[in-house]
Amino acid sequence: MKNILVTGGAGFIGSAFVRRMVQRYPEFHIITFDKLTYAGNLDNLLPVKDAPNHTFVRADIADREAVRATLEQYSVDTIVNFAAESHVDRSILDPDAFIRTDVFGVYTLLDVGRQHGIGRFLQVSTDEVYGDVHEGFSVETDPFLPNSPYAASKAAGELMVRSYFVTYGMDTVVTRGSNTYGYYQYPEKLIPFFITEALDDRPLPVYGDGRQVRDWLHVDDHASGVEVVLLHGKSGEAYNIAGEDLRYNIDVTHALLKLLGKPETLIKHVPDRPGHDRRYAMNADKLKALGWQRQMTFEQGLAATVQWYQDNAWWWRKIKTGEYLEYYKRQYAARLANATNVSS
Ligand code: NAD
Ligand code: DAU
Image 1 (cartoon, rainbow, N blue to C red):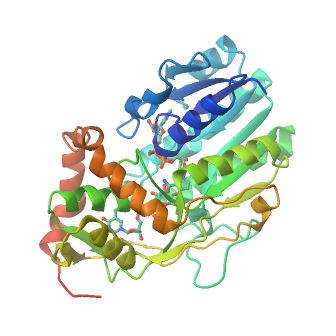
Image 2: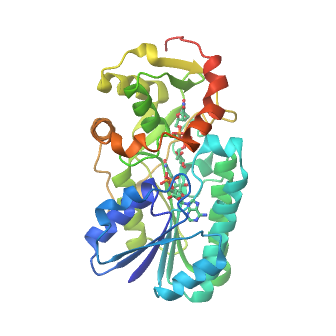
């Protein structure tokens, strides 16, 4: 392993992985390959901008020729694929791009990678492939029951990876991460969206009763889980990366308001997300057996994240313009018009 292509490395989790690997492994050349969609952001890579072992390439994982040329130019021997359309609400509004990137893009990377003779291929996947988990904790052998177009596109991408392992003997591994939060997260996802809205005294639209459960994982713990699986995971296997910090959305919202010193009157209960999974929960024993351990508790991580968004308005204020405002209108205008203040 020497020349590692990190696709989607300008996004939230991908950039945490790139920053980590560039700093920890000067002997590796990390090539970030990213289309820079609305979610891709070169500011996320500023800390490694001048690193001699990092290169950035702007391209699309579904573009076979661009992938081929990059693998060849940089003698790539390893691929870590973070690239995806990643937001559930956008997949409900417009599923098209999700199929193109999360399914066809994964296939393209696999197929060109196989022809190029790459070694390890790591696919970054999600707990959403298991669907709604009413009780207990998902293990890696559980069936896929995805419920949103996003979750289905990620499950389909994973199945392509499996087929390349079984049929062509490619060295593949998969990670399934839980809900991730932390610095540099695009402010459409619950935690950065609510922090940045509350800072401006704007309403926080909680879907339904807010009693959906998510398992929260700090972004640096997610990145270290991917690192461990890349270096030590068994070929053909999948590994859950779970924060093991389960919380109701409404409790996360109250905790954020408390940290920010903002009033609870900002909370607005709005009509629910269609097909909304009630609970995700995973067992991470298989990854722990490789030596991985979560470092950040949710309480520590949430406080640090709130502080980061308070200190780095330069990063998120320029995002919350243009396309972002169009999306905000489509996603929230009608919902907020039907909001209630029921306290939970
Ligand atoms: P993100 O939306 O912040 O970043 C996605 C990145 O992929 C962006 O930089 C974007 O420009 C790039 N990209 C999108 N389409 C591309 C294409 N066709 N070609 C090249 N680059 C493209 O996403 P994230 O939250 O950092 O998630 C990264 C990965 O982790 C995704 O695969 C996601 O499914 C998975 N995941 C996310 C979470 C989470 O809570 N955020 C949890 C588990 C798994
Ligand atoms: O579980 C892993 C997944 O976590 C990743 O695969 C996805 O890429 C990532 O987006 C995330 O999906 P969720 O749908 O769980 O995350 P999101 O931040 O969109 O929402 C978290 C919870 O908060 C969910 O139950 C919906 C709710 N929510 C979200 C938003 C944006 C609200 O109540 N109001 C909101 O405005």
